[in-house]
Amino acid sequence: MANESSIVELGGNGGKVMNFTVGDNTIIKGALLTLVDPRTASGATGVSSNFAGVAAADKEVGDGATTLGLYTDGVFLMSTSGATIVAGNNVMLSGANFVDVANAAASGAQIVGTALNTVDTNSENCQVDIGRR
Image (cartoon, rainbow, N blue to C red; front, side):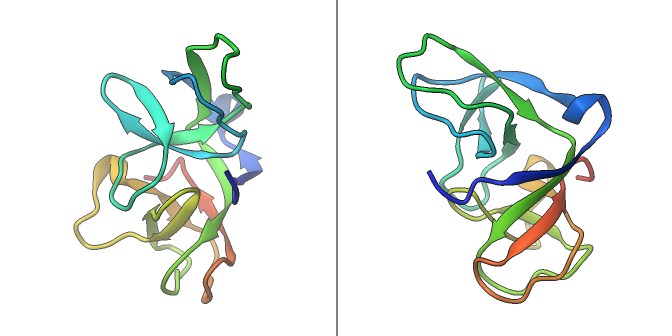
């Protein structure tokens, strides 16, 4: 994958890492992952997906691991796509490792977090507080 997020500041308890079941595939540290039932994390590929968290470590195909820790609290630098994001806007997933302004229908787990800076062009980076959703 590309455009993985990077840590700006971890929230309480070291980023409040939570373990999720994962499939036997490659996941890069910093990847934005979606929540699927039951408590399983998968690569984010679409808009309006439920956000699980940010991969706290790498996972390789065939490594035998069936769980992966995800950061669920902290500030992360994330790649953006689409329209202007204003500081204070909620953001949602917008494809693989991208966020965009949350639409009016987005709620609950669809909200990745709150933008802490304004960005006005595609592929610009935005600091997102994932603990504030």
